[in-house]
Image (cartoon, rainbow, N blue to C red; front, side):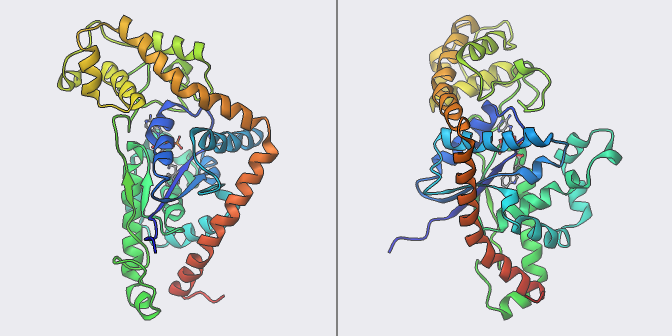
Length: 347
Ligand code: AMP
Ligand code: TRP
């Protein structure tokens, strides 16, 4: 008998403009983990509406993220792809976790502070509560590994804190019911998978800012929907400094734009930043950028073409999501039933 494979869960928000950072930081990792894990990949539409989304656009964006998963190589038959709102357990478990998490914990979340900005009073309650729903996403499946970009590290720590407090608060009850499923208790403490040279891809216009879906400048990011010409142009126009590339990674430290482009190259080529510098050290950006553009197009063009093909048939994509949701529910339902028994609910 083979060992049961560890379970992986991750989510991407359908908020438009999927970009190279999403691909290198998350989606490509999703594909790599498939061989030796049981994977659940979720289009987190309930997270998306924590800031306003035009309804018709949201529907399109849900399909776009699902198409990106599949086009990048996620196998929707072996693994699960679905959208969050089709499985009611996410919202239900989030409620229980709302009563476990402490306001002080949420007050420390840097992403909320960034997203809410100065106008905190006007931010939605959902935006504040976002990390609790994220904890529910992961723990509803007892997932143990979560591939994400660097920016999600703090949210994963909160997820662990919530799991631990639940295990602790309900410890006697969990033992009484014989529901100690993990060493830590009923819930596992999930580990983030944040690895490789591109866990934080930066804006092409400012090497100190994260590449982001919401940056008003389209030149700041490479979208998964960009064609070869757009990619080449954006890389040509990417901000750099006047010096040639250095010989060592150490020397990239004070050069955020150079560091970012070298990191992107390394991630795309599947080599280390030092390997990139071994090849390009001493050379100027005029030589490096066309090579980077070529490599980016080579990677993204097939994904882009496959996404277009999939998006031309929304009925098919919707059927994949529906089927995924049914299989997700089959895993989530018994776990939610156990949670209700642990808490003391009837039914
Ligand atoms: P989001 O677009 O916020 O739903 O993010 C989806 C996934 O992409 C998450 O795992 C993020 O951590 C990751 N991600 C987003 N932006 C970047 C970036 N600039 N570099 C690396 N990973 C990113
Ligand atoms: N908060 C994540 C992001 O923006 C998306 C997300 C929601 C997620 N639920 C998740 C990621 C569960 C991993 C696991 O990027």
